[in-house]
Length: 64
Image 1 (cartoon, one colour):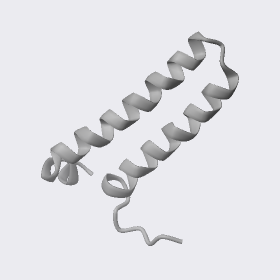
Image 2 (cartoon, helix red, strand yellow):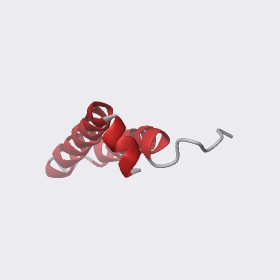
Image 3 (cartoon, rainbow, N blue to C red):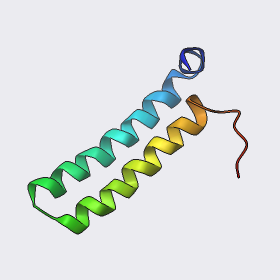
Image 4 (cartoon, helix red, strand yellow):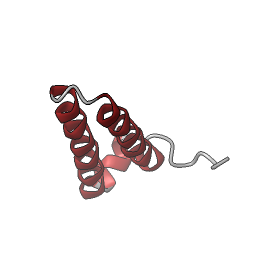
């Protein structure tokens, strides 16, 4: 993973920014006590994490 990040730091930073943006939406939903908003944000966080994992954590895994 370190080698992949070192090879593409801008892509990693972009993926990390996506995770951060999704997490900030979740925090706003928490502050507003918005259960549906938090649930939706959870899906966005999951998608952002998976997007990064596909590139940097397990890039050679075959899609099912």
